[in-house]
Amino acid sequence: QHNEIAEEEWKKLSVFGRRAYDTVASPGTALEQDGTGLPSFWNDDLALEATDFAYANFMVLNFQTSEADALYLHRDGHQRLKFQEPSGVGEWIVP
Image (cartoon, rainbow, N blue to C red):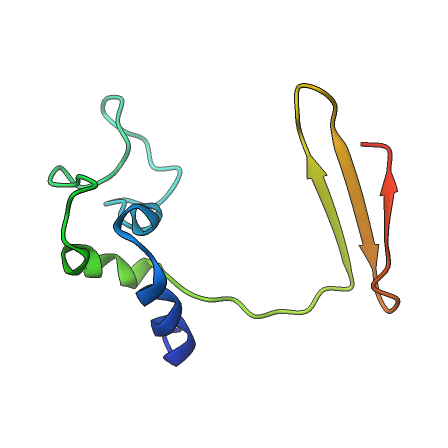
């Protein structure tokens, strides 16, 4: 759903940031050949207004969770952090 919050956040995105929402088909759609899924006219030098069509694919989610589990993958070693409500305190755990 588009609202004032979504509009404000959309306006903050650069052309490069908007490219995540500019695909011509839904994520996971098969391609006939290798490609990005972006429109054929896409380039990072587009005017910001030329990417406004992608606003239809953008939304802001606002939700509350009771638990969060963050996993950071890195070649030098993975890290994992878990948060639980109601304390909101996190603890490092084995990845």
